[in-house]
Image 1 (tube, protein in one colour):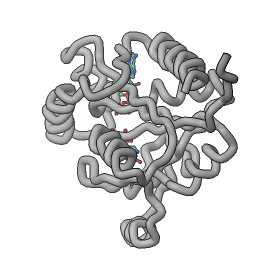
Image 2 (cartoon, protein in one colour):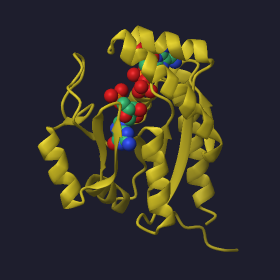
Image 3 (tube, rainbow, N blue to C red):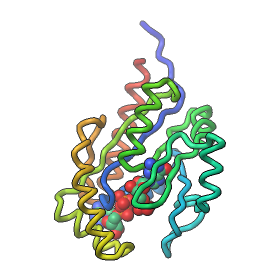
Length: 202
Ligand code: ADP
Ligand code: 5GP
């Protein structure tokens, strides 16, 4: 019988439309599962009242972000709703070297860029793509409104963008409905467990 061997760590890319609940669900997932490593992105967006530098994002100026692009520090970066967001390459590589499971939360452009990096051989590890969807478009609109972090005009723009972003879901390995935060986080944990087992076969 072929000897089973554990592969190195892998990446779990969690994406989905703006306001679907990515950061809420990912926060719950990490809190309940301290064995998972969260990749904290860099962002030029100003912090929201409840956000902490280094925990929610590394908040940086546009000049600092540009320097990081020049240094090649990002696995991927994108402009989302007027601000820049980037995934740190070094942290991910360090964690993968330690055979950890690393969770990334990115917008749909970011997920597509990770896929391109894989196809181009720039990223050499297993990656699982998870797409979070709302139970309905009405619920998505309600959640975006409830968050109250954007004014009406920005909120409407984000909602239109979010509906367009739902069209790419078939490109992902798994689709998870964000009905309740704890149940969505548990479904992602179950996916990670299945993928860990599946990797024993490769
Ligand atoms: P994203 O990171 O995808 O833009 P957020 O995590 O900021 O979305 O969530 C948007 C809003 O929806 C927040 O007010 C959050 O509290 C709320 N929310 C997220 N998931 C749920 C859920 N399962 N049930 C109810 N409200 C939710
Ligand atoms: P927010 O400003 O609401 O925190 O995030 C806006 C969007 O940027 C969300 O869809 C979030 O998933 C995405 N995002 C956060 N970090 C990154 C990143 O490093 N790269 C990309 N491409 N998107 C990110």
